[in-house]
Length: 166
Length: 349
Image 1 (spheres, rainbow over the protein chains, first blue to last red):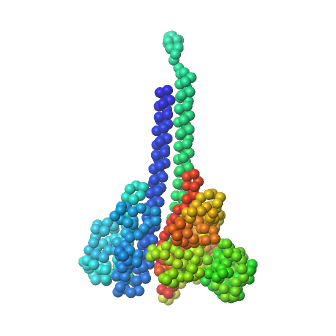
Image 2 (image 1 turned 90 degrees about the horizontal axis):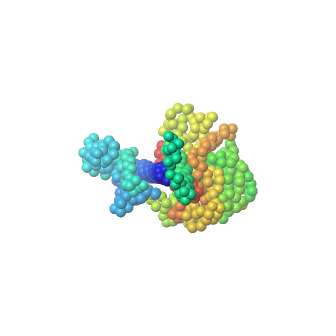
Image 3 (image 1 turned 30 degrees about the vertical axis):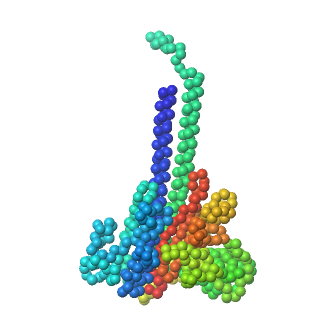
């Protein structure tokens, strides 16, 4: 009886381990899917920003102002976006996606939390000291940040790039 | 000595029948539970792997497509039939077939009472003839069409110029939800015809003066200004909700039929009929479209879901893929993948 009980215990431990591994793989696949959805959403938004940027580049004098109008709170697009199956990380943040246009030349990569080569001259005046280049930028850093509550808790994906007004 | 020890064993030693039965029962229960658990794991892994693989293939396809069309310029194959088209006729003469892929689907007299969907698989080198027509496709009726009837390659979906106020229902084929809100479009959105910058000399000089040269690299010919590309949905099989009893698109019924197929890329030479088009599959064979309603709503969000929606004004190509996979217990599930691509070039550059 004891031998049988030991044998069954070993068998059960093995089976439970195998089942746990399978479930863990299942969760990892779900996490992978979430990340793919986030990547696609980030890339799609980046492409939309490039498209809008291109549209406004016909009027260089107003390029940055018009672009920022579209992607600012209350703008045609706004500064937040949904991302398919991804859940918002908290009640404070309605949508998982955020679009951040950097208009302060003085901000560093450390401030932004992403490697973009900042600080940098964004309005072509030869320095990187301007606090707000909203009205005369020729180049704008953009940070797309997607934060969601997923299988493994709060997850975040950040994508940074530049868009140009010519 | 050994014999003596054996003799000292108690006559009550060993297992009673009850103990053996109890042990056997326990063993069988544990064994059956183990088998069930393993089988469950196997099915779970298999279903998860299947849909994961399909998604991975679709993702790779989107990456390839983005690289391909980032430099491309879309075309909208629209023509007229100067002689009209008799009922059951199998050849159609157009004013020009430029941009029409070697095979595909047409909409004739779109928005009229005699609207008909026709498939074809012959593109004549004269650039005015489409051959091997199959009439009355996608639940339409084979009818005669008047002279100067409008003929559209059904693949392309593009937004109408008039968005606000809403156009007349006869003027659009669907409403898609885009970033800026609902968009009225026409077409099925099952394909996208385009050209890319080419250097006919085989080098990297894509400019002729100040203008880009457009075409495609045709296998056996090389980069040529007569080359064209298209990506399109080709149905391979069908899925019937009636047979499976599942409501795939969540519309509350189980009587829809879907085409399941693949996104393919075709490259062809419009000037030389002897050059065989290259037609290759790009992704998984699990892309789904509702039969007789290509480009229609697939996730019951009350908005249509064309695979390709090209906005000429913003140069944005929105690609939506709905992929059919099987979950555990063979229950079909839909997964959506989408991406927006900005086509960076224009012909007048």
